[in-house]
Length: 170
Image (cartoon, rainbow, N blue to C red):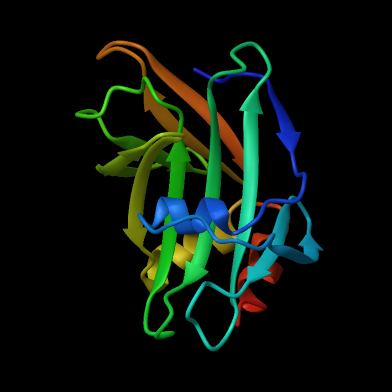
C-alpha cells in the first residue's frame, strides 16, 4: 500500500549511523559533502578512527502517518571490504515480518531486523553486486514495514541520484 511521502533531506549527522551500528553517538555533527538527486553524502570521523567515514543517506516520512518513516543509509564498512544497506524504521513495527523491498515492481525479498534502539529498529543487509546494480539502475524502490501481520505499509524511496552518490563513496 503506497503512502504519500514528504522527502526530508535536512542534514543528518553520522550519529544515526553510529547508533544504527550499535555504537555510541558521535560527538561531532556529520558534514554534508554533496547532494546526489534525492540522496545526501554525509561524512564524519568516528571517535578513535584515523579517517572519516561517509554514507549516502535519504530520510522519508509518510505525510499521513508522521510516525512512520525510514532512514536509508548506504556505506562501505571501515575496512572497505563490504557495502551495507542499513534501514532505520520507527519503533512499533512488527519485527518477525522483517522489512520488505521492491525495486521497479520486482520483489527483492525481506530482511530481518537486527536490533532496536531508542529511536527505531535497524535492518541491515550486505550489498552484493547484483543488488547494487538493481538499486543503482532502478527507478523506484518501496520498503515495506508491517504494523500488523496483515497491514504492510509501503514507503517509496527515490533512487534518483543513488548511482552517482554510490560511485562517490570513499
